[in-house]
Amino acid sequence: EPEVTQTPSHQVTQMGQEVILRCVPISNHLYFYWYRQILGQKVEFLVSFYNNEISEKSEIFDDQFSVERPDGSNFTLKIRSTKLEDSAMYFCASRDQRTGRTYGYTFGSGTRLTVV
Amino acid sequence: DAKTTQPPSMDCAEGRAANLPCNHSTISGNEYVYWYRQIHSQGPQYIIHGLKNNETNEMASLIITEDRKSSTLILPHATLRDTAVYYCPWGGANNLFFGTGTRLTVIP
Image (tube, rainbow over all chains, first blue to last red):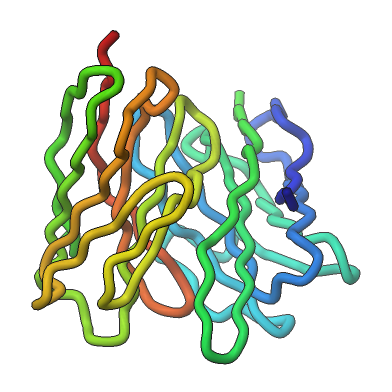
């Protein structure tokens, strides 16, 4: 079964450093998403991306965050200057959408980001 | 404010049917009803979705009330591996928003 692949599985970074989280969505999917989950809390929407631009973003997704689809396969989330409160599990998701049908989101297994 | 509400926790005996309710009284006419689950810290796993009609797949059945204000996810024969947090998120075409879900514990 097709998967969304995220790398690395765990990243430790120092406060103030830039991090890039990588995702390879399912190849024929057109919609891409980032979510995060702080330990013990709910899954929070960050941003959606379609046709090489952001479709929607939440209040969490401020100027410190950016997303990019640098080639035909990767989808990245960059945090410019990490803060302690950015420590969380980050999930990438992708979705297929064709005329007349709606499909569910497929989530990756996540990247655990620890800011020290 | 959450647009879907779910009980925080439920128990189910192994082998019995698990019926998980969700209230979505403010859902709009073209919004789908989705169900996902999360086992430990893994990514949410898609289970099923529907618009108006009841749906069934290899994992579960989805019963949507006629007024679409609530739905029930049915796991027909719960196993220990079905222990997870179950979500009925809400949203539109560009996103899904997750609430706190129902923690289902399947008891041997």
